[in-house]
Length: 226
Image 1: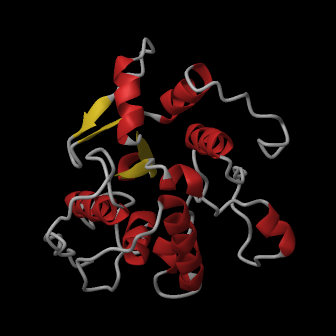
Image 2: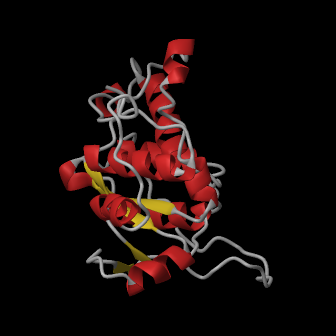
């Protein structure tokens, strides 16, 4: 697999807006994502051509030769990668295209569910629907991200982890929320993301914050998709 270019995405001169320094654009996240995938290289276990990581890079770039990235969230990107993966079945790439884990981890699903509940979004179920897109599938809202939470400034960086064939989730709260977290008594173990220079926390601590500080009620069995 040829190494992808990871030069900086051209940007226009910054304008003064109400956007806070903590907020990160999705394009910047996908640029760092591709950089991480390039770091492992095509010969690393689970990181070759048409690996889950390569497919996500393919669906988040504006083109196969571009250093610009789409303004899409990880929930949408994962679903688009799954659809692309489906087209590879039965082809020469099928050896690399099979046996992929398209499920989110229980912890990251739970964080998504609590963010959705707190901000009034449809709650996702843990399992991806089939590609048939039937009415029953659509009702599951699986590929629907917590849109209102993301509009409020929340971001998630799915850091590639080929060795475990998974991703490590880093959640970036909005600036005002990050400041409130810093001054709270909760031990959220926030860290600075070395790649994007913003503070992040793990999925369990997102839930901890929403439950213990914001007062978000526990999820019902129905809301959890049971």
